[in-house]
Image 1 (tube, rainbow, N blue to C red):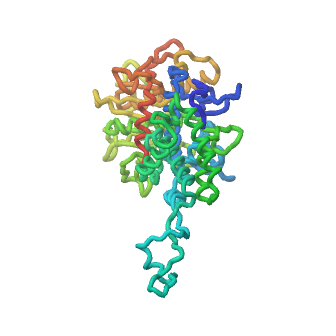
Image 2 (image 1 turned 120 degrees about the vertical axis):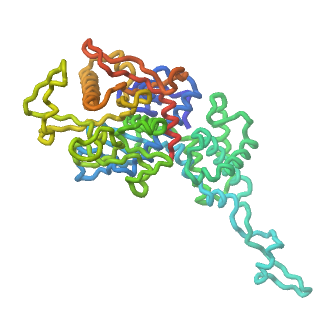
Image 3 (image 1 turned 30 degrees about the vertical axis):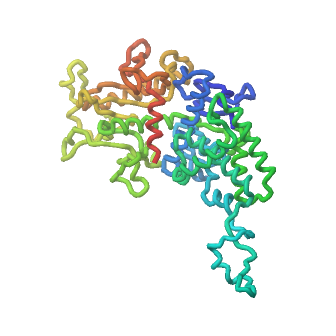
Length: 519
């Protein structure tokens, strides 16, 4: 197991990687933090440990939520690269988006996964007690052995042996169970109980066996994940495992299953030179950031959501538009990304704008429409009532596009107004200290243009109360005015103020709400 105090923190990874990997400049491992974590404390064992396990749970939830959906597709020879696609490899899950960005998910850390996977009620009980022949006599079971008995002259029966439960290796194998349950219990505590159902159902038994090990080998204050006792605790566990192995002479498959899981946990380390899942992290964290933000708004402001470009699952949610296992997903309108290669669900509601020539109201996906009419027309900018565009036959429009902002939210203070929110996975310095590189400038301009297009489309029917870029940010202390963040600045482009605000979102709060949604 790696030492959290030995991890080098990297803030603002250039390739948008979040996770742990071998440093390119040294033999040390580096923990690449998400964007916005510039104020994360250095050399803080507890903060680093908590962030690691929080990200571990976050990565695992992201994989579980998406791996079985059409958002991910398996690569095949006839599946072209212009589609979103996913491959499963020994290193995890990889996805390439339509924009050509590669998202690689290494969701497994063998050291932890093997401990979680090794738990099995039958294996635990099998090592503790096996039915073996013994010379001990259980008088309550004598009636079951009369056919094996030897009858003596004085009406006495003699039974040579019985098949009764007994310890296979009376002391050492039981200690292996206690050692395993202690490690498992420590991991469960760090994961805040976010573990498979078979483990969840036996938490009290695991804690009971774990306490046996602590009583025999450790002091009350020792822990695997405590800054002051980590090194000593791991040393004791290694020594105990070695003694158990030396003194255990009968070793069956059940024994080896637990032994190997413990050995990998105690002696294993991240190995980026191999593709077995030990290289841990995500490249392309923006996809996960979007899911986190959508989950936050659906849990806190669902009744105010008018449109959302997402299909996340929600605990306890029932979608009448979907069937079977997809009923927990929020998407209620099926569309596509324009390439017509794959369909995608979005969350869409009905607006208050009526159709002009038939009964019913426009959906918000229909209001998000930009049209280019090639026929001539008059635009009177100073007095729009003299425009003649309203008299046109829109059915003859030549070009039509449907832009897709991440979120449109009804304003609670003024219901007639709406708020546009687009999630951006960039550091605050992207807006405050631009790098002026060609790639950075191009992204900045394209983001502004898209956001202004969203605003232009909605302004045809509604007023805009706010237009936000929603970026991740680490707060050591929650902001007093708004627990989920604050506006940092309004953007300018080429010396002109643009009506787009940069909102610093409380990453840890949004992450907590996201993890609370484990199905």
